[in-house]
Length: 93
Figure 1: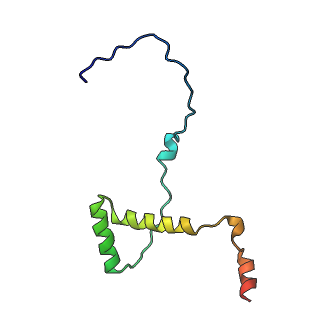
Figure 2: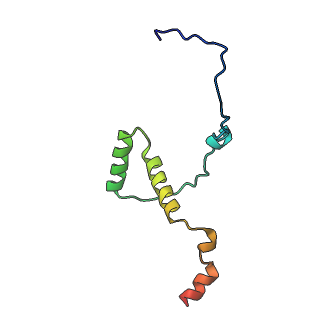
Figure 3: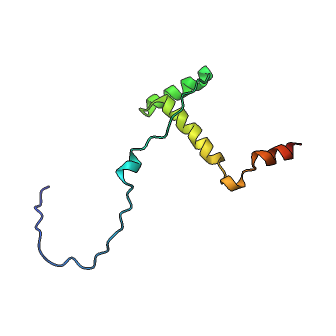
């Protein structure tokens, strides 16, 4: 900084208090429970994710997991919109 800042005790004018909108640290540090699975993928798919992961400096498994999570979120419907298992059995009969 070339120019020195001079602080004064002058009034600053009308101010507005902004409510705290940041999540608490406990919400930032959460990790969703993981379930280990064995899954056979095509070599082409694995090579693709490994290549893309290296370009973006991340892990390819993490990219696959996020892709699956995004798919699930896009497919989710409210619980009350899903047919119950009994309703599905009746509809199939």
